[in-house]
Image 1 (cartoon, rainbow, N blue to C red):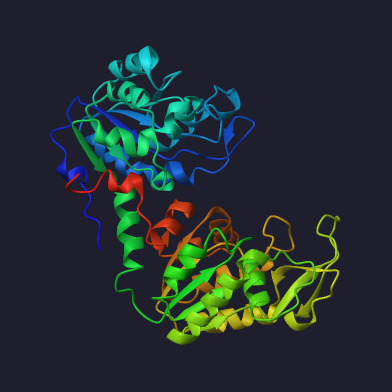
Image 2: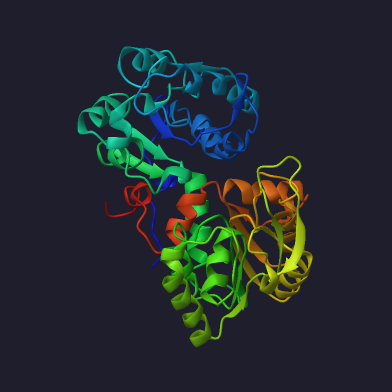
Length: 399
């Protein structure tokens, strides 16, 4: 069922109105400098539109997991500078997200001005969706815009609580685009439709996998997820990461694929190592039927890379989440980059999500060829699993 969101078009006049915008500025930093501005750049269309309409913007975000404590290493202060660079205008900063610092910052903004509030997770009430914390936030503005798709699957104060407490709330342009695109993968996508899943564990993606199996035509699996499916198919996986308690579940997934006629592609060869911790790690390539007892599979092999590429050549739609190997440990990122290249050159409508997946596409030089790069790996998986997203439901028409 298509979610009908309240959008920026549904808001009243914004001229000189305080608008609290929930953005996702959970960006990586090194030495006080933002090292990847992707999430900031993705928020710009919403922020520019609101600013052009004369709103005074107070931006709220989390960064990291400070667990309700004020941690300087998780401060959003450096993000204000990066945002100012991207917007081409000054950005004010408040030392707190509630109380006098926040109010004084907002009151000091000119129409069209932008200010950033300090990390909302410095308060335990954010993740607890505490009513008192929500009420403090609601004192700052009568209008709320939710544009943080990356946290939409969390029922937190600034994603689910606040939009129901203010007079007017709506989805930002990024949120609108994410929902429209991802729901399109569930409702009438062009076929053949391929799902590619990777990552360490099947447990975190089993709901998504089970839901996708009902609508896709082609399934490709790599990474640790593939180990559990291969084990369910009867292969001896040596010292590879296998979730033994999920083998029965994996067997049911494979059986359902067989019933539906889904073309399943699991690795036929893998890169193995006896010691992932050695530097550089010793590795070799072998068939999945010949994995040594004292070695672990850490990436898909060259034969599998070719098979995956061939499987993607005739598809019309692709969704991919999760690396094909131990991506953070080169050279075991090679399989992920090969799959990224195949997705980028497939000529299909492609959607990818998840930090390592996006990094693989970037490293392979095909990020610009991807139709939609989702800003929320976990949120996209939850949506494709058919689960309700609290941060989206709070912005739906009729709420």
